[in-house]
Amino acid sequence: MSSTPPTPWPLSVACSTGASNTNLLHAILATRALDEISTFDDYAHVRRYISTRGRPDLDQTGAGRTIRGLMFWVFPGGKEGPFHETGDGKLKKHGLLVTVEAGSEEEEVVRRVKDGLVDGVIRHEHVGRREGDIASSAPTENASSTSRTEPHADTQSSKQFPASVAHSTGETNLDLLYTILASVDLDEISTAEEYTAVRNYVSNQNQSRSRGKRTQAERGLIFWVYPTGMYGPFHRDESDGTGGGDGQVIRYHGLLLTVEPGILPEEVVERVRVGLQDGRIRHEHVGV
Image (cartoon, rainbow, N blue to C red; front, side, top):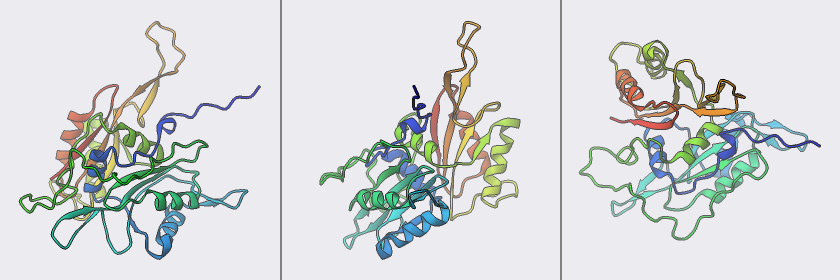
């Protein structure tokens, strides 16, 4: 009697988070590291992006399926980024964070983008390849209810949304964090050699190879850091504490880093030192 193998973590918990988890969503947007795609021409740009970056392969049904995961931002045609200012100077949010697992159908991604965009709200939509993927919570008329970090067009702040509300979320907003891990091939950096790889990564990715030079102003970083001797976001413990063990105990580890433009490599390293905690998955945001 055959049985379907269980879906491995974090694929098993990946889901759309709708208008929740906005604190982590704000931190991601503040990095300005995401590709941003318009809905112009009846979502032709979205289709082109999926085809180019997701490299869809035609399966036996003729459906184009992605062969790599994706994370990108979709904004309504005629606008850009995650917000715009209205004629009376108020800030109005817009757009959709899209996470796509490898093996997803191109047209399903487009359909979920169409369904997921809600006027005046920033949201997250996840498209999974497995049957029974958790669907997005349906947008409602009151979906624009304010969060604890509602942005404002207040000129008193030196920062503009979303940087004005971006911050570390620690062990909260884990639904979105897990979904990102399930979908996107994030660069994964070890803490080996006293965080040398982390320093080099920040410098090289931002073309700031000279010591002390700040990152480029245009784009930040989103990446994963794991402890020396480990890999990815978890490992299987070979011991159950009794000397036996079947290797099935999962131990989590690692840190999602969202880094705004203009940050020194040493600032990132310091936040990694503080943020990494044994047996936990967390998020740390490094802002200007």
